[in-house]
Image 1 (spheres, helix red, strand yellow):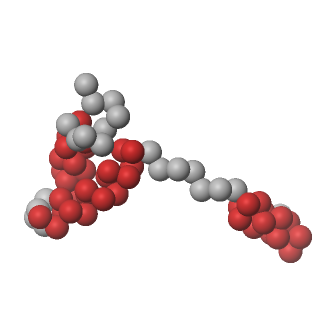
Image 2 (cartoon, one colour; image 1 turned 90 degrees about the vertical axis):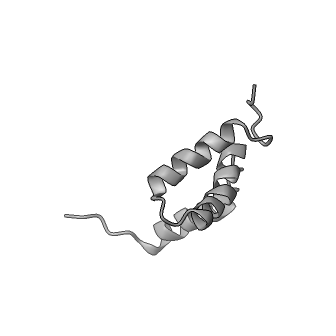
Amino acid sequence: MPKVRTSSTAARSTAAKKETPAKKMSAYNQFMKTELPKYKAKNPATGHKEAFKQVAQMWRSSPLNPNKA
């Protein structure tokens, strides 16, 4: 028989989620979040997988990349 959540259990888990601060996005994730839509707008015929690969390659030479050699 499946367990039924009580209101007190649901309230505790909701309260715990609200108190936990959001994890800071990495530089890579911030770059991908901003650059992927730009790339897709300029190249609408490109599929998501290929666009993601291209933007990931752009990341390698980006000045925002802290690991750039």
